[in-house]
Image (cartoon, rainbow, N blue to C red; front, side, top):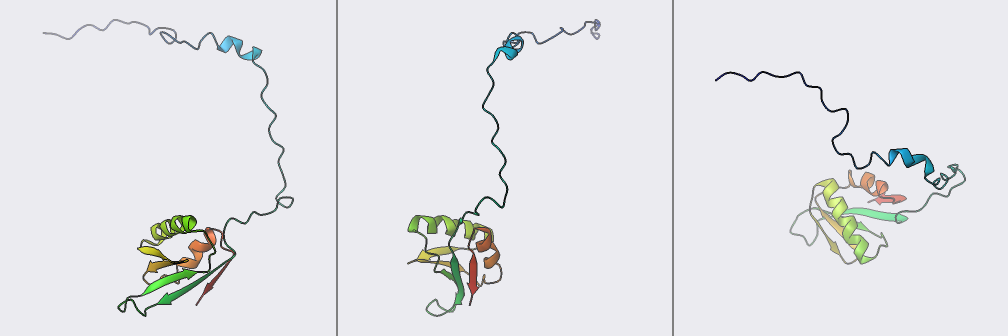
Length: 129
């Protein structure tokens, strides 16, 4: 059995069935959209406070069987937001943690790495003790 002879056939000039081909001719008849928003200067806008004003970070060992934990206190966030912050910090630091009362408790000594993550989340002042 031999190979088939390939015939020199030109492909069709356009898509076989383009349902939008007739619409391109009517593009000029469409109404104009809303005008683009005017750009505002950075100095004219107030920077929005997206996080708490203060956080206190400290390391604890007492009452935990000798294990080190890092405690983040005085965030002043509601309980629902504490859970989302805890999840983000645990993912960023690669450690475990839990919410105890109004504080976030992270496993291990995270005092060096934690302030950068808190400032990225909008905390204006981080006190490490």
